[in-house]
Amino acid sequence: MGKLEQKLSKISVLIVDDHKFLRDMLRDMLRGFGVNQLHVASHGREGIEAFRNQTPSLVFTDLNMEPMNGLEFTQWIRTNPNNPNPQVPIIMLTANNDATSITAARDAGVSELIIKPLVPSSVLQRLNAALFEPREFITGPTYTGPSRRRRSCANYKGIHRRAADPLRVSHLDLVTKKIVKDITVEAKALMKGIRTLDVTDRLLVRAMLNRAKTIKQLATQVRDEQLISTTSSLVGYVEAVGANGNM
Image (cartoon, rainbow, N blue to C red; front, side):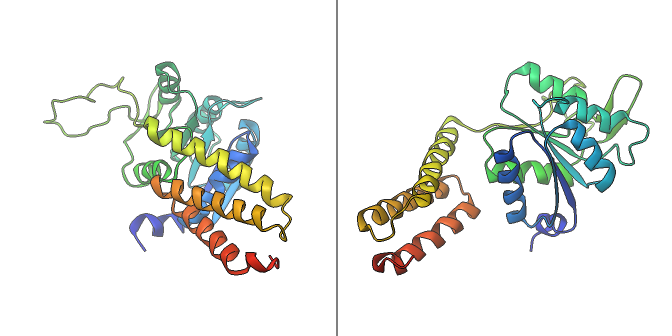
């Protein structure tokens, strides 16, 4: 077990997102990484209650939520005098990759930022950065949160040496975005087909098997180990018992 896996097995994580599908997807992903203590909330206000009750070691929050969005939730964590852990790492999720949204997240005190769609590699990178590469925590009259400087070397003369530098952002290239989109389409079709499947119809069973194989191939391209394992299991099961109609 690596250092990150050992750390994840010991911490508690709070997920705040108003989309149940995304909450469940991230929760399953984190479980696959070894996180055992997981809590969820559907918006910032519920997040505050969960934070007070659970005092998590790390927080994932969506940006756009109602009635309290992720920026307001982050600011509460960072500045509320009654909060027992204002320095908790906060990873923000958003579909907005514009400079305004990224700057707003940075200025609210976010530790790391992930641009949707979610893929395991991006989540792992941000977890590793938040847990093992934390920036110095700053408490001042106009800003409370991780230092907005990305480098600490006094002799470094390159980029990322200004206090206004943006936080580290996980972007997906266009090819990966398309693959993730294709996986979503195929997975939804597979789930719909399974719900109405006549297991005695060999043509339908073969179509389901082919779709599962397609998803496995796509998952391999984006290195989604959990999805690879799941689809491999499904393919093996269908190949083993699908032909006799006893699935």
